[in-house]
Image: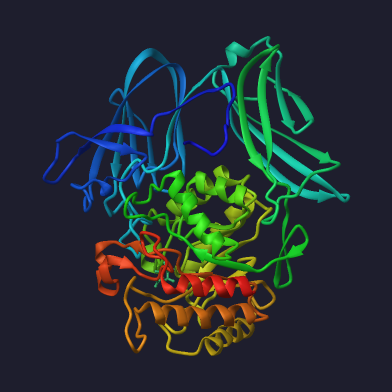
Length: 556
Ligand code: ADA
Protein backbone atom coordinates (compact mmCIF):
# COMPACT_ATOMS: atom_id res chain seq x y z
CA UNK A 1 0.00 0.00 0.00
CA UNK A 2 1.36 3.40 -1.03
CA UNK A 3 -1.46 5.63 0.33
CA UNK A 4 -4.99 4.84 1.52
CA UNK A 5 -6.36 6.42 -1.67
CA UNK A 6 -5.34 6.51 -5.35
CA UNK A 7 -3.11 9.47 -6.20
CA UNK A 8 -3.16 8.76 -9.93
CA UNK A 9 -5.68 7.47 -12.51
CA UNK A 10 -3.42 8.09 -15.50
CA UNK A 11 0.24 8.15 -14.40
CA UNK A 12 1.55 4.58 -14.32
CA UNK A 13 2.50 3.68 -10.74
CA UNK A 14 3.96 0.44 -9.44
CA UNK A 15 4.78 -0.27 -5.80
CA UNK A 16 8.19 -1.96 -5.80
CA UNK A 17 7.95 -2.85 -2.10
CA UNK A 18 5.39 -5.27 -0.74
CA UNK A 19 7.74 -8.06 -1.81
CA UNK A 20 11.00 -9.83 -0.97
CA UNK A 21 14.13 -7.95 -2.05
CA UNK A 22 17.66 -9.31 -2.10
CA UNK A 23 19.45 -8.24 1.09
CA UNK A 24 23.24 -8.22 1.50
CA UNK A 25 24.89 -6.93 4.70
CA UNK A 26 28.21 -5.15 4.10
CA UNK A 27 29.84 -6.07 7.39
CA UNK A 28 29.68 -8.57 10.27
CA UNK A 29 29.41 -12.36 10.24
CA UNK A 30 27.23 -12.44 7.14
CA UNK A 31 29.02 -9.78 5.09
CA UNK A 32 28.56 -10.49 1.40
CA UNK A 33 25.99 -13.21 2.03
CA UNK A 34 22.70 -12.75 0.22
CA UNK A 35 19.32 -13.16 1.90
CA UNK A 36 15.67 -12.46 1.05
CA UNK A 37 14.22 -9.56 3.09
CA UNK A 38 10.65 -8.30 3.32
CA UNK A 39 10.00 -4.70 2.21
CA UNK A 40 8.83 -2.32 3.45
CA UNK A 41 10.69 -3.57 6.49
CA UNK A 42 13.56 -3.25 8.95
CA UNK A 43 16.37 -5.77 8.91
CA UNK A 44 16.31 -5.83 12.74
CA UNK A 45 13.16 -7.98 12.47
CA UNK A 46 15.16 -10.70 10.67
CA UNK A 47 16.38 -13.35 13.18
CA UNK A 48 20.02 -12.88 12.15
CA UNK A 49 20.06 -9.06 12.14
CA UNK A 50 18.21 -8.00 15.30
CA UNK A 51 21.29 -6.06 16.41
CA UNK A 52 22.84 -5.13 13.06
CA UNK A 53 24.16 -1.58 12.92
CA UNK A 54 25.89 -1.11 9.59
CA UNK A 55 25.48 -0.76 5.83
CA UNK A 56 23.52 -3.18 3.69
CA UNK A 57 22.18 -3.45 0.16
CA UNK A 58 18.56 -3.97 -0.79
CA UNK A 59 18.21 -5.03 -4.45
CA UNK A 60 15.37 -5.56 -6.89
CA UNK A 61 15.15 -6.05 -10.67
CA UNK A 62 12.73 -3.62 -12.29
CA UNK A 63 11.30 -3.38 -15.81
CA UNK A 64 11.07 0.18 -17.07
CA UNK A 65 11.97 2.61 -19.85
CA UNK A 66 11.65 6.26 -20.90
CA UNK A 67 11.29 8.92 -18.18
CA UNK A 68 10.84 7.32 -14.76
CA UNK A 69 10.38 8.69 -11.26
CA UNK A 70 11.36 6.61 -8.24
CA UNK A 71 9.95 7.77 -4.88
CA UNK A 72 11.12 6.35 -1.56
CA UNK A 73 8.64 7.16 1.20
CA UNK A 74 11.24 6.41 3.86
CA UNK A 75 14.63 4.66 4.07
CA UNK A 76 16.16 4.25 7.51
CA UNK A 77 18.22 6.08 8.03
CA UNK A 78 20.59 6.97 5.16
CA UNK A 79 19.99 5.87 1.56
CA UNK A 80 22.20 5.70 -1.50
CA UNK A 81 20.14 4.74 -4.56
CA UNK A 82 21.80 3.12 -7.58
CA UNK A 83 20.33 2.14 -10.94
CA UNK A 84 22.40 -0.36 -12.92
CA UNK A 85 25.32 0.49 -10.64
CA UNK A 86 25.11 4.27 -11.21
CA UNK A 87 24.33 6.41 -8.13
CA UNK A 88 21.13 8.40 -8.83
CA UNK A 89 20.14 9.66 -5.36
CA UNK A 90 21.24 10.06 -1.75
CA UNK A 91 19.07 10.90 1.24
CA UNK A 92 19.56 11.31 4.97
CA UNK A 93 16.82 10.73 7.54
CA UNK A 94 14.44 7.83 7.92
CA UNK A 95 11.25 9.81 8.20
CA UNK A 96 10.71 11.87 5.06
CA UNK A 97 10.14 10.96 1.41
CA UNK A 98 12.53 11.68 -1.45
CA UNK A 99 12.33 11.07 -5.20
CA UNK A 100 14.56 10.99 -8.24
CA UNK A 101 13.89 11.34 -11.98
CA UNK A 102 15.76 9.26 -14.54
CA UNK A 103 15.23 10.44 -18.13
CA UNK A 104 15.37 8.39 -21.35
CA UNK A 105 16.00 5.03 -19.67
CA UNK A 106 16.39 2.23 -22.19
CA UNK A 107 13.32 -0.03 -22.09
CA UNK A 108 14.09 -3.31 -20.33
CA UNK A 109 15.19 -4.86 -17.06
CA UNK A 110 17.30 -2.77 -14.70
CA UNK A 111 18.89 -3.32 -11.29
CA UNK A 112 17.65 -1.04 -8.51
CA UNK A 113 19.85 -1.01 -5.41
CA UNK A 114 19.34 0.93 -2.19
CA UNK A 115 22.34 0.96 0.09
CA UNK A 116 21.01 1.49 3.60
CA UNK A 117 23.07 2.75 6.53
CA UNK A 118 21.81 2.85 10.15
CA UNK A 119 25.18 3.58 11.75
CA UNK A 120 25.77 6.50 14.12
CA UNK A 121 28.56 8.08 12.07
CA UNK A 122 30.00 11.60 12.06
CA UNK A 123 27.69 12.32 9.09
CA UNK A 124 24.59 11.81 11.21
CA UNK A 125 23.54 14.69 13.47
CA UNK A 126 19.95 13.59 14.12
CA UNK A 127 20.08 9.79 14.14
CA UNK A 128 22.26 9.40 17.24
CA UNK A 129 22.16 6.99 20.21
CA UNK A 130 18.85 7.92 21.80
CA UNK A 131 15.79 7.02 23.82
CA UNK A 132 14.24 5.43 20.73
CA UNK A 133 15.60 3.11 18.04
CA UNK A 134 17.10 4.18 14.73
CA UNK A 135 16.28 1.10 12.69
CA UNK A 136 17.76 0.04 9.34
CA UNK A 137 15.85 -0.79 6.21
CA UNK A 138 13.65 0.19 3.31
CA UNK A 139 11.09 1.01 5.95
CA UNK A 140 8.35 2.68 3.89
CA UNK A 141 7.06 2.06 0.32
CA UNK A 142 9.18 2.54 -2.83
CA UNK A 143 7.20 3.56 -5.91
CA UNK A 144 8.17 3.40 -9.61
CA UNK A 145 6.32 5.81 -11.90
CA UNK A 146 6.42 6.35 -15.67
CA UNK A 147 6.21 10.02 -16.65
CA UNK A 148 6.20 11.95 -19.93
CA UNK A 149 7.25 15.43 -21.07
CA UNK A 150 5.92 16.98 -17.87
CA UNK A 151 4.60 15.88 -14.49
CA UNK A 152 2.94 17.31 -11.40
CA UNK A 153 5.36 17.65 -8.50
CA UNK A 154 2.75 18.55 -5.88
CA UNK A 155 -0.51 20.35 -5.24
CA UNK A 156 -1.09 22.27 -2.01
CA UNK A 157 -4.58 23.29 -0.87
CA UNK A 158 -5.13 25.71 2.00
CA UNK A 159 -8.66 26.36 3.22
CA UNK A 160 -9.94 29.49 4.91
CA UNK A 161 -12.96 31.71 5.29
CA UNK A 162 -13.14 34.76 2.97
CA UNK A 163 -16.14 37.10 3.04
CA UNK A 164 -17.96 34.46 5.02
CA UNK A 165 -17.42 31.74 2.44
CA UNK A 166 -15.16 28.68 2.48
CA UNK A 167 -12.28 29.33 0.10
CA UNK A 168 -9.56 27.04 -1.23
CA UNK A 169 -6.19 28.52 -2.13
CA UNK A 170 -4.59 26.08 -4.57
CA UNK A 171 -0.92 25.98 -5.60
CA UNK A 172 0.31 23.52 -8.24
CA UNK A 173 3.93 22.77 -9.14
CA UNK A 174 4.69 21.38 -12.59
CA UNK A 175 8.05 20.09 -13.78
CA UNK A 176 8.60 20.12 -17.55
CA UNK A 177 11.13 17.47 -18.62
CA UNK A 178 11.00 18.02 -22.38
CA UNK A 179 10.19 21.55 -23.52
CA UNK A 180 10.72 20.59 -27.18
CA UNK A 181 7.84 18.10 -27.09
CA UNK A 182 5.51 20.88 -25.94
CA UNK A 183 6.43 23.49 -28.55
CA UNK A 184 3.34 24.45 -30.50
CA UNK A 185 1.11 22.38 -28.23
CA UNK A 186 -1.82 23.90 -26.35
CA UNK A 187 -1.29 22.41 -22.88
CA UNK A 188 -4.20 22.87 -20.51
CA UNK A 189 -3.82 22.28 -16.78
CA UNK A 190 -7.20 21.33 -15.43
CA UNK A 191 -8.13 21.34 -11.74
CA UNK A 192 -11.27 19.77 -10.29
CA UNK A 193 -12.65 19.90 -6.76
CA UNK A 194 -16.10 18.34 -6.55
CA UNK A 195 -18.18 20.00 -9.29
CA UNK A 196 -15.79 22.96 -9.59
CA UNK A 197 -13.39 22.93 -12.55
CA UNK A 198 -10.67 25.50 -13.20
CA UNK A 199 -8.26 25.58 -16.16
CA UNK A 200 -4.87 27.19 -16.72
CA UNK A 201 -3.04 27.55 -20.01
CA UNK A 202 0.53 26.29 -19.55
CA UNK A 203 2.92 28.82 -21.05
CA UNK A 204 5.98 27.18 -22.58
CA UNK A 205 8.37 30.13 -22.12
CA UNK A 206 8.16 30.13 -18.31
CA UNK A 207 10.98 27.68 -17.61
CA UNK A 208 10.99 24.01 -16.68
CA UNK A 209 9.38 24.42 -13.26
CA UNK A 210 6.11 26.34 -13.09
CA UNK A 211 3.94 27.24 -10.12
CA UNK A 212 0.27 27.86 -10.90
CA UNK A 213 -2.14 29.15 -8.28
CA UNK A 214 -5.73 30.14 -7.90
CA UNK A 215 -8.38 30.80 -5.28
CA UNK A 216 -11.79 29.14 -5.47
CA UNK A 217 -14.80 30.17 -3.40
CA UNK A 218 -17.30 27.45 -2.43
CA UNK A 219 -20.95 27.99 -1.67
CA UNK A 220 -21.64 24.82 0.23
CA UNK A 221 -19.06 22.45 1.74
CA UNK A 222 -18.88 20.02 4.64
CA UNK A 223 -16.15 21.01 7.09
CA UNK A 224 -13.46 18.65 8.32
CA UNK A 225 -13.50 18.14 12.08
CA UNK A 226 -12.66 15.32 14.50
CA UNK A 227 -16.37 14.52 14.80
CA UNK A 228 -17.04 14.78 11.07
CA UNK A 229 -13.77 14.26 9.13
CA UNK A 230 -15.10 15.05 5.64
CA UNK A 231 -12.39 14.77 2.98
CA UNK A 232 -12.35 16.19 -0.57
CA UNK A 233 -10.20 15.19 -3.51
CA UNK A 234 -8.36 17.69 -5.66
CA UNK A 235 -7.76 16.27 -9.15
CA UNK A 236 -5.25 17.69 -11.63
CA UNK A 237 -4.77 16.76 -15.26
CA UNK A 238 -2.33 18.08 -17.88
CA UNK A 239 -4.02 17.75 -21.25
CA UNK A 240 -3.14 18.30 -24.91
CA UNK A 241 -6.49 18.08 -26.62
CA UNK A 242 -8.07 14.94 -25.19
CA UNK A 243 -4.73 13.31 -24.37
CA UNK A 244 -3.95 13.39 -20.65
CA UNK A 245 -0.16 13.69 -20.26
CA UNK A 246 -0.12 13.42 -16.47
CA UNK A 247 -2.40 13.58 -13.48
CA UNK A 248 -2.29 13.93 -9.71
CA UNK A 249 -4.94 13.40 -7.04
CA UNK A 250 -4.60 14.51 -3.43
CA UNK A 251 -6.97 14.96 -0.50
CA UNK A 252 -7.71 17.85 1.83
CA UNK A 253 -10.37 19.05 4.26
CA UNK A 254 -12.18 22.33 4.77
CA UNK A 255 -10.92 23.37 8.17
CA UNK A 256 -9.12 26.37 9.59
CA UNK A 257 -6.79 26.50 12.61
CA UNK A 258 -6.32 29.75 14.53
CA UNK A 259 -4.61 30.77 17.76
CA UNK A 260 -6.75 33.16 19.80
CA UNK A 261 -5.32 34.21 23.15
CA UNK A 262 -4.63 31.06 25.14
CA UNK A 263 -6.86 28.92 22.94
CA UNK A 264 -6.41 27.08 19.67
CA UNK A 265 -9.54 27.22 17.47
CA UNK A 266 -10.59 24.68 14.87
CA UNK A 267 -13.28 26.18 12.64
CA UNK A 268 -13.75 29.00 15.17
CA UNK A 269 -14.38 26.52 18.03
CA UNK A 270 -11.83 26.08 20.83
CA UNK A 271 -10.78 22.53 21.58
CA UNK A 272 -8.77 20.69 24.24
CA UNK A 273 -6.07 18.20 23.42
CA UNK A 274 -6.38 14.80 25.11
CA UNK A 275 -3.47 13.17 23.43
CA UNK A 276 -0.72 10.62 23.43
CA UNK A 277 2.82 10.62 22.08
CA UNK A 278 3.51 7.73 19.72
CA UNK A 279 6.76 6.35 18.29
CA UNK A 280 6.64 4.30 15.09
CA UNK A 281 7.91 1.16 16.77
CA UNK A 282 6.89 -2.48 17.03
CA UNK A 283 8.85 -5.63 17.94
CA UNK A 284 7.58 -7.42 14.83
CA UNK A 285 8.06 -4.55 12.36
CA UNK A 286 10.65 -2.14 13.74
CA UNK A 287 9.59 1.30 12.46
CA UNK A 288 7.90 -0.19 9.36
CA UNK A 289 4.43 -0.82 10.75
CA UNK A 290 2.04 -2.14 8.09
CA UNK A 291 -1.42 -0.69 7.50
CA UNK A 292 -3.24 -3.11 9.84
CA UNK A 293 -0.79 -2.48 12.70
CA UNK A 294 -1.14 1.29 12.33
CA UNK A 295 -4.93 0.89 12.30
CA UNK A 296 -4.76 -1.23 15.46
CA UNK A 297 -2.80 1.50 17.25
CA UNK A 298 -5.27 4.17 16.14
CA UNK A 299 -8.27 2.09 17.28
CA UNK A 300 -6.68 1.57 20.72
CA UNK A 301 -5.93 5.31 20.96
CA UNK A 302 -9.41 6.42 19.87
CA UNK A 303 -11.15 3.86 22.10
CA UNK A 304 -9.14 5.30 24.97
CA UNK A 305 -10.87 8.65 24.41
CA UNK A 306 -7.84 10.43 22.99
CA UNK A 307 -8.39 12.97 20.20
CA UNK A 308 -4.76 13.65 19.21
CA UNK A 309 -1.41 12.01 18.56
CA UNK A 310 2.00 13.65 18.75
CA UNK A 311 4.41 12.08 16.25
CA UNK A 312 7.34 11.95 18.67
CA UNK A 313 9.93 12.71 17.50
CA UNK A 314 9.82 12.79 13.70
CA UNK A 315 7.49 13.01 10.68
CA UNK A 316 5.32 9.93 10.32
CA UNK A 317 4.34 7.55 7.53
CA UNK A 318 1.81 9.06 5.08
CA UNK A 319 -0.44 6.04 5.64
CA UNK A 320 -0.65 7.01 9.34
CA UNK A 321 -1.56 10.59 8.35
CA UNK A 322 -4.13 9.40 5.77
CA UNK A 323 -5.78 7.32 8.51
CA UNK A 324 -5.78 10.24 10.98
CA UNK A 325 -7.46 12.37 8.26
CA UNK A 326 -10.10 9.66 7.81
CA UNK A 327 -10.64 8.99 11.52
CA UNK A 328 -10.59 12.65 12.62
CA UNK A 329 -7.53 12.31 14.87
CA UNK A 330 -5.68 15.62 15.35
CA UNK A 331 -1.93 15.38 14.77
CA UNK A 332 1.03 17.35 16.19
CA UNK A 333 3.74 16.49 13.66
CA UNK A 334 7.34 17.44 14.33
CA UNK A 335 10.71 17.39 12.65
CA UNK A 336 13.31 14.86 13.73
CA UNK A 337 15.20 15.72 16.91
CA UNK A 338 15.22 14.49 20.46
CA UNK A 339 17.20 15.91 23.33
CA UNK A 340 20.06 17.33 21.26
CA UNK A 341 22.29 19.47 23.48
CA UNK A 342 24.11 22.61 22.34
CA UNK A 343 27.37 20.82 21.52
CA UNK A 344 25.44 18.37 19.33
CA UNK A 345 23.43 21.21 17.75
CA UNK A 346 26.79 22.69 16.73
CA UNK A 347 27.46 19.56 14.65
CA UNK A 348 28.33 20.94 11.17
CA UNK A 349 25.43 19.06 9.59
CA UNK A 350 22.78 19.56 12.31
CA UNK A 351 21.03 22.67 11.00
CA UNK A 352 21.00 21.53 7.38
CA UNK A 353 19.69 18.10 8.33
CA UNK A 354 17.02 19.48 10.67
CA UNK A 355 15.88 22.10 8.15
CA UNK A 356 15.74 19.51 5.37
CA UNK A 357 13.36 17.45 7.49
CA UNK A 358 11.14 20.51 7.92
CA UNK A 359 11.07 21.17 4.16
CA UNK A 360 10.32 17.56 3.27
CA UNK A 361 7.76 17.20 6.08
CA UNK A 362 5.76 20.30 5.09
CA UNK A 363 6.10 19.91 1.32
CA UNK A 364 4.81 16.31 1.51
CA UNK A 365 2.29 16.59 4.38
CA UNK A 366 0.83 20.05 3.72
CA UNK A 367 -2.66 18.89 2.74
CA UNK A 368 -3.43 16.64 5.72
CA UNK A 369 -6.28 18.33 7.62
CA UNK A 370 -5.48 16.21 10.70
CA UNK A 371 -2.18 18.07 11.22
CA UNK A 372 -3.09 21.13 13.30
CA UNK A 373 0.39 22.15 14.47
CA UNK A 374 4.04 21.81 13.45
CA UNK A 375 6.62 21.03 16.13
CA UNK A 376 10.42 21.17 16.09
CA UNK A 377 13.48 20.23 18.14
CA UNK A 378 12.06 18.29 21.09
CA UNK A 379 14.04 19.15 24.27
CA UNK A 380 16.97 20.67 22.42
CA UNK A 381 19.14 23.52 23.75
CA UNK A 382 16.49 26.23 23.97
CA UNK A 383 18.20 27.64 27.07
CA UNK A 384 21.25 28.77 25.03
CA UNK A 385 21.80 31.61 22.56
CA UNK A 386 23.10 29.24 19.89
CA UNK A 387 20.15 26.93 20.38
CA UNK A 388 17.85 29.93 20.13
CA UNK A 389 19.36 30.86 16.77
CA UNK A 390 18.50 27.38 15.47
CA UNK A 391 14.93 27.55 16.80
CA UNK A 392 14.56 31.01 15.27
CA UNK A 393 15.65 29.86 11.80
CA UNK A 394 13.50 26.76 11.88
CA UNK A 395 10.36 28.60 12.95
CA UNK A 396 10.99 31.13 10.17
CA UNK A 397 11.30 28.27 7.67
CA UNK A 398 8.04 26.69 8.86
CA UNK A 399 6.18 30.01 8.57
CA UNK A 400 7.60 30.57 5.10
CA UNK A 401 6.41 27.13 3.96
CA UNK A 402 3.06 27.12 5.75
CA UNK A 403 1.38 30.13 7.33
CA UNK A 404 -1.85 28.23 7.98
CA UNK A 405 -0.77 26.25 11.07
CA UNK A 406 0.68 27.34 14.42
CA UNK A 407 4.09 26.06 15.46
CA UNK A 408 5.59 24.98 18.77
CA UNK A 409 8.40 23.03 20.42
CA UNK A 410 8.41 20.75 23.45
CA UNK A 411 10.73 22.22 26.06
CA UNK A 412 12.21 20.60 29.13
CA UNK A 413 14.37 23.65 29.84
CA UNK A 414 11.60 25.63 31.48
CA UNK A 415 12.88 27.68 34.43
CA UNK A 416 15.72 28.75 32.07
CA UNK A 417 14.23 28.60 28.57
CA UNK A 418 14.96 31.71 26.43
CA UNK A 419 12.82 30.81 23.40
CA UNK A 420 9.20 31.17 24.52
CA UNK A 421 8.78 34.31 22.41
CA UNK A 422 9.39 32.29 19.22
CA UNK A 423 6.57 29.70 18.94
CA UNK A 424 2.82 30.33 18.63
CA UNK A 425 2.10 27.72 21.32
CA UNK A 426 4.11 27.00 24.49
CA UNK A 427 4.69 23.31 25.23
CA UNK A 428 6.52 21.67 28.12
CA UNK A 429 7.46 18.08 28.92
CA UNK A 430 6.97 17.62 32.68
CA UNK A 431 7.33 14.51 34.84
CA UNK A 432 6.04 15.12 38.37
CA UNK A 433 5.62 11.75 40.16
CA UNK A 434 8.42 10.28 38.03
CA UNK A 435 11.59 12.34 37.59
CA UNK A 436 10.37 15.05 39.95
CA UNK A 437 8.96 13.82 43.26
CA UNK A 438 6.43 16.57 43.67
CA UNK A 439 2.62 16.64 43.63
CA UNK A 440 1.50 17.27 40.08
CA UNK A 441 -0.66 20.31 40.77
CA UNK A 442 2.21 22.01 42.62
CA UNK A 443 4.74 21.32 39.87
CA UNK A 444 2.35 22.30 37.08
CA UNK A 445 1.67 25.57 38.94
CA UNK A 446 5.42 26.20 39.28
CA UNK A 447 5.91 25.73 35.52
CA UNK A 448 2.93 27.98 34.69
CA UNK A 449 4.12 30.62 37.19
CA UNK A 450 7.57 30.58 35.56
CA UNK A 451 6.04 31.06 32.11
CA UNK A 452 4.09 34.05 33.47
CA UNK A 453 7.18 35.56 35.13
CA UNK A 454 9.31 34.97 32.02
CA UNK A 455 6.53 36.80 30.18
CA UNK A 456 7.41 35.78 26.62
CA UNK A 457 4.87 33.02 26.40
CA UNK A 458 2.38 34.03 29.07
CA UNK A 459 -0.48 34.96 26.73
CA UNK A 460 -0.06 31.98 24.42
CA UNK A 461 -1.80 28.60 24.47
CA UNK A 462 0.00 26.14 26.79
CA UNK A 463 0.21 22.38 26.21
CA UNK A 464 1.75 19.77 28.46
CA UNK A 465 3.47 17.93 25.60
CA UNK A 466 4.68 15.02 27.72
CA UNK A 467 3.69 13.65 31.11
CA UNK A 468 3.75 10.05 32.34
CA UNK A 469 5.49 7.33 34.28
CA UNK A 470 7.09 3.96 33.63
CA UNK A 471 5.62 0.50 34.24
CA UNK A 472 6.80 -2.97 33.30
CA UNK A 473 3.93 -5.01 31.90
CA UNK A 474 2.94 -7.59 34.54
CA UNK A 475 4.91 -5.91 37.33
CA UNK A 476 2.85 -5.61 40.51
CA UNK A 477 3.69 -5.43 44.21
CA UNK A 478 1.94 -4.73 47.48
CA UNK A 479 3.40 -1.24 47.85
CA UNK A 480 2.73 -0.10 44.24
CA UNK A 481 6.36 0.88 43.77
CA UNK A 482 7.74 2.66 40.71
CA UNK A 483 7.74 0.41 37.62
CA UNK A 484 4.56 -1.35 38.78
CA UNK A 485 1.47 -1.01 36.65
CA UNK A 486 -0.39 0.29 39.71
CA UNK A 487 2.08 3.13 40.25
CA UNK A 488 1.87 4.19 36.62
CA UNK A 489 -1.94 4.16 36.68
CA UNK A 490 -2.07 6.20 39.88
CA UNK A 491 0.54 8.68 38.65
CA UNK A 492 -1.23 9.18 35.32
CA UNK A 493 -4.57 9.64 37.09
CA UNK A 494 -3.11 12.50 39.13
CA UNK A 495 -1.18 13.92 36.18
CA UNK A 496 -4.06 13.96 33.69
CA UNK A 497 -6.61 15.26 36.20
CA UNK A 498 -4.34 18.14 37.16
CA UNK A 499 -3.70 19.05 33.50
CA UNK A 500 -7.34 18.77 32.39
CA UNK A 501 -8.59 20.71 35.40
CA UNK A 502 -6.05 23.49 34.93
CA UNK A 503 -7.38 26.65 33.30
CA UNK A 504 -3.80 27.35 32.12
CA UNK A 505 -3.47 24.16 30.10
CA UNK A 506 -5.34 23.68 26.78
CA UNK A 507 -4.07 20.18 26.28
CA UNK A 508 -1.99 17.25 27.41
CA UNK A 509 -0.04 14.47 25.68
CA UNK A 510 0.75 11.30 27.62
CA UNK A 511 4.28 9.97 27.28
CA UNK A 512 3.72 7.49 25.76
CA UNK A 513 1.41 5.16 23.83
CA UNK A 514 3.49 1.97 23.77
CA UNK A 515 6.79 0.65 25.12
CA UNK A 516 9.51 1.08 22.51
CA UNK A 517 13.00 -0.21 21.83
CA UNK A 518 15.87 2.21 22.56
CA UNK A 519 19.51 2.32 21.40
CA UNK A 520 21.66 -0.08 23.38
CA UNK A 521 23.73 2.91 24.58
CA UNK A 522 20.64 3.87 26.65
CA UNK A 523 20.49 0.64 28.63
CA UNK A 524 21.33 2.40 31.93
CA UNK A 525 17.98 3.98 32.64
CA UNK A 526 15.91 1.70 30.47
CA UNK A 527 15.07 -1.77 31.74
CA UNK A 528 15.00 -4.29 28.84
CA UNK A 529 16.68 -1.63 26.63
CA UNK A 530 13.14 -0.32 26.23
CA UNK A 531 11.41 2.91 27.12
CA UNK A 532 8.71 1.45 29.38
CA UNK A 533 6.39 4.46 29.77
CA UNK A 534 3.83 3.03 27.39
CA UNK A 535 0.26 2.64 28.60
CA UNK A 536 0.35 -0.49 26.51
CA UNK A 537 3.43 -2.65 26.15
CA UNK A 538 5.31 -3.18 22.88
CA UNK A 539 2.82 -5.89 21.85
CA UNK A 540 -0.02 -3.42 22.59
CA UNK A 541 -1.12 -5.38 25.67
CA UNK A 542 -2.89 -2.80 27.87
CA UNK A 543 -1.36 -2.02 31.26
CA UNK A 544 -3.61 -0.96 34.17
CA UNK A 545 -2.99 2.65 33.09
CA UNK A 546 -4.87 2.16 29.81
CA UNK A 547 -8.27 1.79 31.50
CA UNK A 548 -7.43 4.58 33.97
CA UNK A 549 -6.58 6.96 31.11
CA UNK A 550 -9.78 5.91 29.32
CA UNK A 551 -11.83 6.72 32.44
CA UNK A 552 -10.26 10.17 32.75
CA UNK A 553 -10.26 11.11 29.05
CA UNK A 554 -13.92 10.15 28.80
CA UNK A 555 -14.71 12.24 31.88
CA UNK A 556 -13.20 15.49 30.55
C1 ADA B 1 11.78 13.14 27.29
C2 ADA B 1 11.76 12.86 25.79
C3 ADA B 1 11.07 11.57 25.43
C4 ADA B 1 11.42 10.45 26.41
C5 ADA B 1 11.02 10.90 27.83
C6 ADA B 1 11.38 9.84 28.87
O1 ADA B 1 10.73 13.96 27.66
O2 ADA B 1 11.15 13.91 25.06
O3 ADA B 1 11.51 11.19 24.13
O4 ADA B 1 12.80 10.20 26.36
O5 ADA B 1 11.79 12.04 28.16
O6 ADA B 1 10.87 8.71 28.72
O7 ADA B 1 12.15 10.15 29.77
